[in-house]
Image (tube, rainbow, N blue to C red; front, side, top):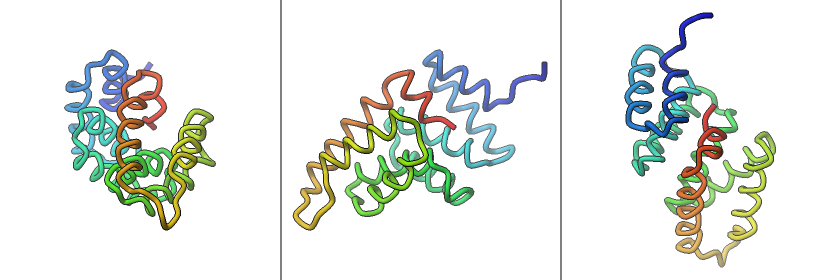
Length: 149
């Protein structure tokens, strides 16, 4: 059996809730060779640590490497809605929803239902609700596993 990569070890550490150690390993892995999946996972760890500027940067880089990556689209969409960039955020969430698992599709459907995008839309409510959703969604081991590539 081949040795595990830093990326795989980092995911194992995340399952053990050893987030800081996982973050360090993902950073090292990115320095060696970047990929969409690595950037997505690194950014997800940053979001779990409430480092949203870094998380956004990571998801943006992931999508620069693979613009059609549904998981990175989903994750960046959540960040953008939280940052009141509703048009792009909801666009990414809708685009990714059709290619993700049932839990993600239901989560997107719930956000879209709660915050239907229309001219009279209350951006402040959308941002606070998506922030609450992100913290709840990213806070469970099962949901963290879904957010990773």
